[in-house]
Amino acid sequence: MKPACPTATGGCLAGLRVRRLGRQSYADACVLQNAAARAVSAGGPDQLLLLEHPPVVTVGRSGGQGQLLVSAAELTCRGVALVDTDRGGGVTYHGPGQVVGYPIVDLRRRRLTPRGFLRILEVALAGALIEQGLQAFLRTGLTGVWASGGKVAAIGVAVRRGIARHGFALNVDVDLEMFELIVPCGLAEPMTSMRAMGWRGLRSDLMRGLTLHLGEALNHAERKGDAYRDRRPFPHSLASPWPATRIEAGR
Image 1 (spheres, rainbow, N blue to C red):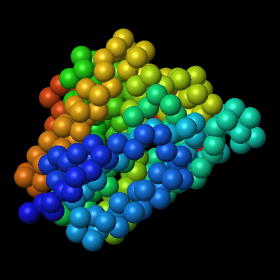
Image 2: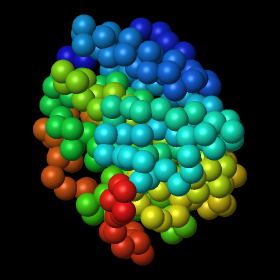
Image 3: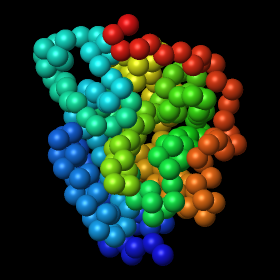
Image 4: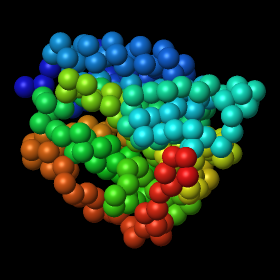
């Protein structure tokens, strides 16, 4: 049985307490995630924190200086913070015009593996994009969501004592030039946004659809016993025009 959801800003869906938190600094968002993780670990409902960050470049566990194309001093001059983080993945950018989602989920309670959880995030994001009339596809061997113009959503999580933290960043109408300061997630490939793809919809509809798709994917996986663990059951995926090439940090 899923824990009961208290009333919260944004509501509750499928055992997932949805909290819309507006703009939060990266440091404050980490504090919010840690508090949510403690509540979930104590038996409370899983939580989805939806927010936006001021400009910040974050360095994940597999990132490094080789994925920064400018100095820390230049980032500071541009008003961009630089933060090391414990999530998976490489270097990425967060800023105004993104929807950042931090699903704080008890993987043990939902019978999920970390790999299966990553697939759930991909499926939910791609489904929400397709619902908005946009192209979206996944790529074998890589994590995230792509469209014909490039990568549109980045994903990176950390799991501690069975509780998942961190999550995804969806480019809605973000300043894409900011990604030219880094090698996003270690991939020397373009980034895109929903606006660059021609989207002119309502953010409220996007957030509602994203929440619904995530709740449905979590429930489906829970019922099927981690159905997303070793495959990508995404019926709307398109053939990817992008090669699965990476550049390593420092190269």
